[in-house]
Image: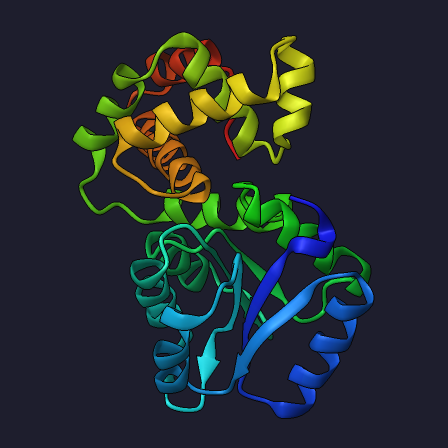
Length: 242
């Protein structure tokens, strides 16, 4: 996808912020095909808008933007949804990913990175910074909600190559970087990623990475009670404690 062909649906509660975002995106060769400040209008507009990415404010005038993310994914499964918030809490980021969002951006991010991040999301990349991923990992490590059995099953479902690629994505690597490092084509990487998502029952790369962090969380919990065996397993999987 070329930058000129990227189409964005902007859902942001503040008109002044919308005007600024539209100017930034337009200057970067990105077309804003629709805009609104509310969940209700976004749901009404989405079926007839040809957008590649929806950039959605976390808190809208009439509801929760993270809930809207799931609804937009149902309306247009081929489009990516990226959340935009004044700040990012682990709970919000995890909720967004579970609702199908490709990522979460904060409003203090450098404006020069917005266009490239949205293009990456449209291409199937996860729009999460390494710092945000680390924050989510810490939250997942803190919470023990009985997901150990599912986490243990994640590793068993994947081939060695699929597991390798998933770990590289969790490190914030781009598809092209993964392909270059493994000396395979970009299309082969994408094929492996699709297989990973299918096996894990998720619809976005960000959600697949979340499954990996779930496994890491379970292993960290085991480390607290069985230090030596769990530490050896972490080493074998090339995962280090946060």
